[in-house]
Amino acid sequence: MHRVLITDSLSPAGLKILRETPGIEIDDRGSQKMSAEQLREALSQADGVIVRSGYKLTPDILKDLKRLRAVVRAGVGVDNIDLPAATREGIVVMNTPAGNTISTAEHTIAMMMALSRNIAPACATLKGGKWDRKSYMGTQLAGKTLAVVGLGRIGLSVARRAIGLEMKVVGYDPFLSQERAAQEGIELYRDLDELLPKCDYLTVHTPMSPETEGLINATRISKMRKGVRIINCARGGIVDENALADAIEAGHVAGAAVDVFSKEPPPTDHRLINLPQVLVTPHLGASTDEAQELVAVEAAEILSGFLTRNEVRHAVNMAPISAAEMAEMGAYLDLGLRLGLLMSQLIKDSGVRSAKLQYRGEAATKKTKLISSAFAAGLMSSAFAENVNVVNAEMLARERGIEISESLSNETGDFSTLVSATLVTDNGEITAAGTIFGKQFLRLVKLEQFQLDAYLDGLLLLYRHIDKPGVIGYVGSVCGKHSVNIAHMALGRIKSEPGGASIAVLHLDNEPNPAALAEVAQNDAVQEVQLIRLPSAGAPLPWAVCQ
Ligand code: NAD
Ligand code: MLT
Image (cartoon, rainbow, N blue to C red; front, side, top):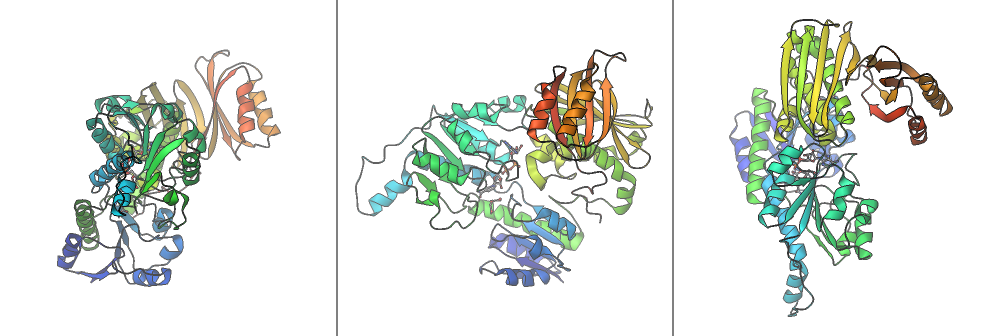
């Protein structure tokens, strides 16, 4: 018998599916609040668990749970589950990404409208016995500009609804192309700071990740128009809570609508909850009968399929790769992933339109679809934090209008095996190609039009320059002065003679500080300096748990 633990309240339709699946028994704790010890005890008896956001599955909670094989998140955000810890323990984490999109978008619009028309305080005053028609003058939405930060499933649904309300929608999402944004009627900005002064309302819909924590901070709020209104129905902390409270108290921000908090439940003396200009709800974005039924049914189907038929759907921390496939393909998946990670950092904020992968020589005889997916996982990972893997990456890219195509050639060129990736972005094309020396040594052999032989791991300092005497020495001495050790250096130039455009890729042992980078950039011959971060050599693929 497979035992399924339910930690948070789950819609009856989901429970029914589990009850009716032969071979499954349920431990439903949805109506009680468990202590950490009780949660661990219940998890230790379970083969699978369905969670919402009521509990945090920390490394301590997940450690050495011999029986637990799967966690299913009935909802989108898996930020309450420690994914590396789950992966380490061999626990597959799956989610239900789309079931609550519409409800959360509707909640965002409801919050924006209620905030604009003072619905909550006016209602409270009238119920308190006072007929006050003077204190609650509102603002109209039609004709106003809404900025949507994060244009994924929910962000786009909010944008479509706001356009229906005759609002102008501007947006920022590094992974949406201009073309796709234009189709949706959204004016897309490539620089978040440029968008900020343009809006009357701003709503965030990014995932919570180290990149998005505090994305809307005091400096950014100060760039917005006086009287702006801010909405957060994504995750607490994407908008810095103290910075928002300060700006409201200072009269710069007119009001805010907040559904999510850094700590949930928030303390009763939370600054935002106690400000009259702030409309709050207790994480209700997905709390509709329809959304809860959809996510509960999907979660139940996913977990019963996993436990009774070994099916894996919407996995966020693994790819179903067999041990044999991994032995044959591991280095190629790693190469694809690293090329994707490299290119996602090279393109900065230019929207990606498509990616073309070319496989030559031995690479063309491998399962190229899987390598392309690993590339897509690398490319998309900064947009989706830890939620992206070889299983879902191509689909996530396609949802953002990014087509990934492949071409194969058995002919070998200068290398017996070569994977070459070209990204078409709003700012033009960029190409990078890599090869495998021996069985596992990955090398970057082409970047843009430059041939080179650079490492594809760790910390890389990349700079473009005019190839003239003294530049390498200058950069070397700056690194020395700032105690940065250079482990390897690769140079590429277009013409074989000196004097032309060149690129250098330095493999560093330690991180240069901003002053060192600025000093490198000061040299007249140096045009652009960039630090690229890749996994260390031989690091395991983040999502590949061998089955
Ligand atoms: P999604 O993955 O479909 O979309 C997220 C988008 O954010 C992507 O398009 C991505 O490119 C973009 N993005 C990533 N980093 C960015 C950055 N630094 N700047 C701008 N854009 C960036 O996710 P979704 O399903 O739309 O969910 C969005 C958020 O809503 C998540 O945080 C999720 O947890 C939350 N959520 C909240 C509720 C609720 O009850 N309040 C319900 C569902 C989802
Ligand atoms: C989600 O991530 O799906 C939402 O926050 C809703 C929920 O927690 O149920």
